[in-house]
Amino acid sequence: MPANASGRVKRNHMRYRGRHELNVVPMIDMMVILVFFLIFSAVFTRTSILELNFPAAQQAVPDLPQGLNLEVVLRKGKIDVDDRGTGLLKSVPNNDQGYDFAALAEYLLLVKSKYSDKQDASILLEQDVPYDALVQAMDTLRVYIPKDKKYDRAELFPQVSIGDAPL
Image (tube, rainbow, N blue to C red; front, top):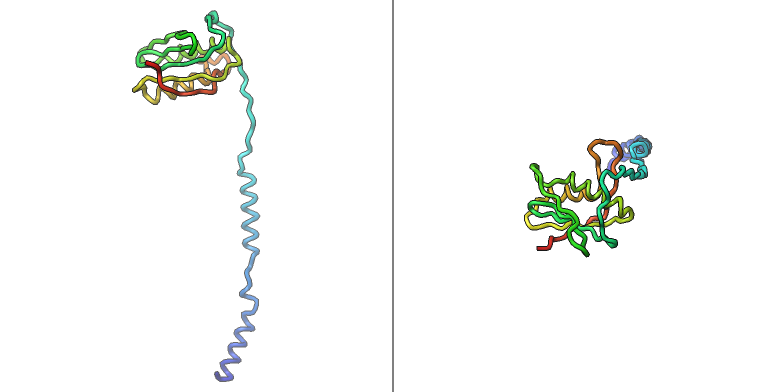
């Protein structure tokens, strides 16, 4: 290698010395911006308490058995509210739009007024009952939402089980 070439390599090496180090300043700037963004975009959970405000009983509370095992049976032409031990409590026939979930909700509210500590209920389905009817029945069984909004929604039976209806 000629002397001239080695001198040129040394000069280039001295000229670019220190330029091969990693510059972390832009990376630190980006991390500060990301931390700031994550802190201010975080979702902070808020615990909410659901108050139960039952209306005054417009109807008399029905005669119900002592150890109630509530079952709501969706049949093709009606909704039956049963007690597993004693049998049928109320039958709600379909209206023009299909299942009458409003009448079911009113009756379940009366049941809840007598069994305020009861949390569980079962939904039993006949064959070929639409999935939408199951979802609406679950919503009706879990929470009562009044139409006239005189009071807030009331929790009914939040622990719902699903099964097949007896023949």
